[in-house]
Image 1 (cartoon, helix red, strand yellow):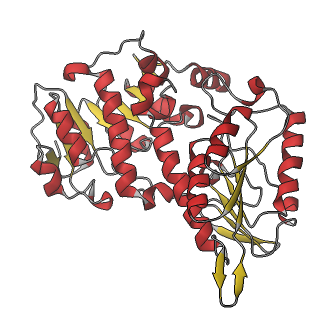
Image 2 (cartoon, helix red, strand yellow):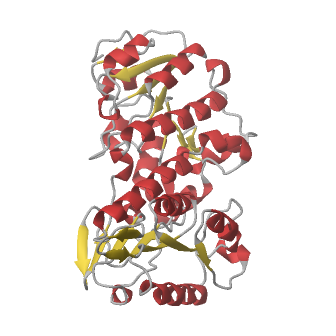
Image 3 (cartoon, one colour):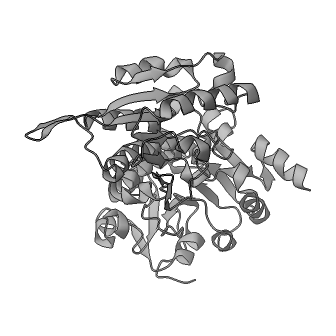
Length: 390
């Protein structure tokens, strides 16, 4: 076996490795969380250098009892459970042993070849993005944790790119009015963007198809831009936004278009779980914004809410700067890793109490996050998509 770790062990061993996705700086386990898992009876093995970009040295891990391996193969060959941030590559899955367990973000309905590979390899897998939004699972809600960071960074990015001050300033040259910001989508990312823009001194308004978020928006000092819509059409049972009818979407676009000329910045955060991001700003609508205005499209990793967005790039359209950030979480690697590590550890302790794996299908958290098990796809939407492709 490659590496410098003896493969024989009697305790349940949890492993973490370098993230191989381009530009990814996060790590799935931080030293403090690894220490807590060891105290609960787990062995923890990590790849050397895995935490460097998040601010954690190999010495930090070794000091709390983490075993260190020189390469990922040593970790994958030794660990019973592999904790990751991003979904693994097909080559990484090939290096896993049959019967192992994977816990990471998977987004299974958009990663069908990956799911097929996990089934073929006999890997049991859980998706952190499928953890249900219930009270008992709040400590495991990695999507909300990462969305908090994205919303905060999105607001700072807007302030950086806008050629104006965010706050009102009284100067010897006269009074400069505050920037006006429209936030589209009032989920976790949107609410954090609102709060941060308000702290920076901007005048903020927010739009969301879900009437239920009005109180949260207003509690942060922003104006809620409402449209008449049936609540059941706008959100699913978990409170996430869902795809609306064509007629409602048309009205939605008209309302957003009517606000474009009134704002210096638009921050978009609208996502539909398991689907590409909905288009809410057309190229034609950009012509309504003042020259020098900025669009920050936080949905860029999923295709973007703006028709002009190019993920990972900044483009200029009709005098408007359209920013499509895709690495905001990596730019906050220290806190992003800290939050994610606590989320995934809470999930692990529910999945393997007393350091013993217990796949209890009666547990809603385990049942709904389980993707593959016993060489079968357990996540129903993913299974149906795979069957339709056969």
